[in-house]
Length: 153
Image 1 (cartoon, rainbow, N blue to C red):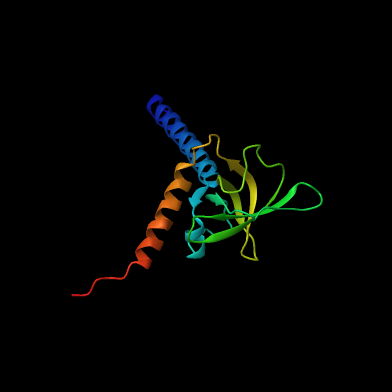
Image 2: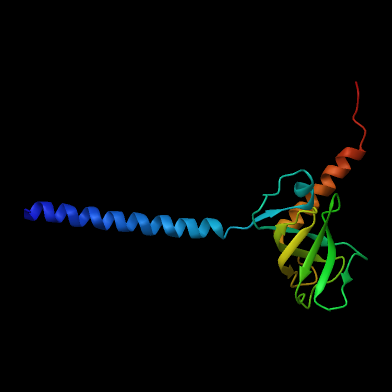
């Protein structure tokens, strides 16, 4: 093999290895992406089936139910337009409270509830995750728009 052919083979091999590494990295990143979905979007069927995603909003007042084992919890997340029941097994964050902002990551269960693998609570009295604040604002705008009668001329 000539020196020129050896160089071309080496460059081709290096490019192939770089391509394989890039494909593996992109595949790993794609499988770890968790999209944010509001309860209204879930009710409209926009939630990915079989994939993890995040749902956020406010914890509905009076919805928190703890099981006897102390770690199994059910609560309702609302964006003020639609509600979604969330089941979680684990220790909730210290700042988790009813009526406050929350984001839960997990998957939809067969019974239409959301099974969370992670629950994140707000970290400040006035803070709500941006996605949750937007979802609540959008839901309130939709419901306000639905209540107003349309003008006819």
